[in-house]
Image 1 (cartoon, rainbow, N blue to C red):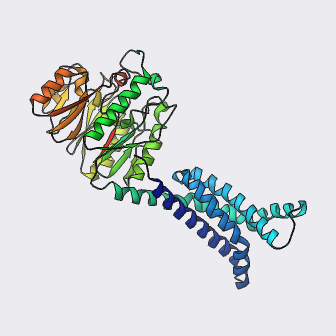
Image 2: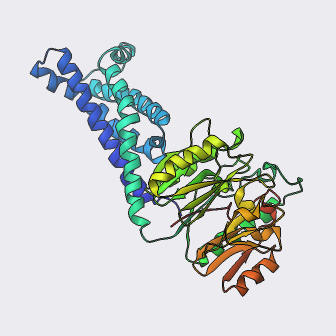
Image 3: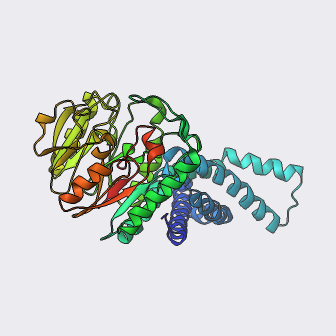
Length: 403
C-alpha cells in the first residue's frame, strides 16, 4: 500500500499554491518597504510578478509530486530551479504581450532582472519552499494518512534489494543466497500478514541497500511515536530516511536516535510497557540512554540486556502475547535474567510475530517449536524464510508493526 495519488495531488497542489502565494506577497512587501512605502509599488510589482507566480504554481506542483518537499535541501533546490524558470518565462511572456520581440537585447534585459526584481523573487521562493512549503506538504500528507489508518493494523515492509546476497554477516558463515527464491519467500511473508488482517505498506525500494529488507532495524514504534534509529554500521544508516518518511506519512510523531548513539530496532523487544534493549554490536550505551529518555515520558521502562551470541536481541528471543519470553539457551546470555522464560528446541523458533492475541507467525524451519506453541493454545502461521535466515534475518526483521 502506498500513498494514494489523490492524496499526493491534493497535498502537492496545496503546497505549490501556498508557496507561490506567500512568495508573491513577501516579494511585493520587500519592494514596498525598500521604496519607502509608496502605494504605487504594490500594484506595479504585483503585475510584474503575476505570470512568474502562475508558472511557479505549475512547476512547484510538478516538483511536489516527485516528493522534493520531504527534505529541506531538495525543497530549497526545487524552489531555486522553479524560481529561475518561472521568472524568466513570466518576464518573457510579459515582454511579448507588451509588444517587444525576444531578440538578443531583450533576452539580455531579462537575465539582468535577476540582479533586481527577479533575483529577490528567486531567493524568497527558495526559502519559502524549504520552510513553509515543506511544512505544508508533510502535514497534508500526514493528516490524510492518519485519517486513513484509524483502527487498522499496518505492517511496514520493504522489498528485497537487488544485491540482497551482499548483506552483512556477523555471527554466521556466508552461504549462497538464492535471490529469486528470497523474492518468492518475501511475497509469501506479505501474504501471511495480509491473510491475518494486516495491511502492508511498502517503504520505498532501495535497489543498492542490501540489508534494507530488514526494515525493523530502522524504526521502534512506541504507540503513536516512531523512534528513527541510527544503525550500528555506517553502510546501513541511509536506510532510515525512507522509513522515517513512511512513518511521517502515517501521522506518527517522530523522535530520533542521534550521534554518537547507535540503536537498531532488532535490539528492542517490547513486552507490555517494558522495553528490553540489547546491548549488542549494533546498539551502544548512548543509544540505549537516548531511547530511555524518549520512552520514559511515554510510560515505558527500558531494561538493558547483554547480547553477545547473536546479531540482535530479537534473534535470540521474542515474546508471546501472554508475556512469555521465547529463547534458545545457546543464544541467550543469561536466561535466568528473564521472567517467564521458555526455552525452545530450535534456534529458528525464538522469533515470533504476534498477529493477534491467539495467533503468531514464525519460521517453518522450527516445526518442533511450532508444535510446542500449538500445545499452549496458539494458532501458529508458518512461512519459509530460509534465504533471509542465511543473512541472520528472522520473521520479526522483515516488518514494523503499527497497531
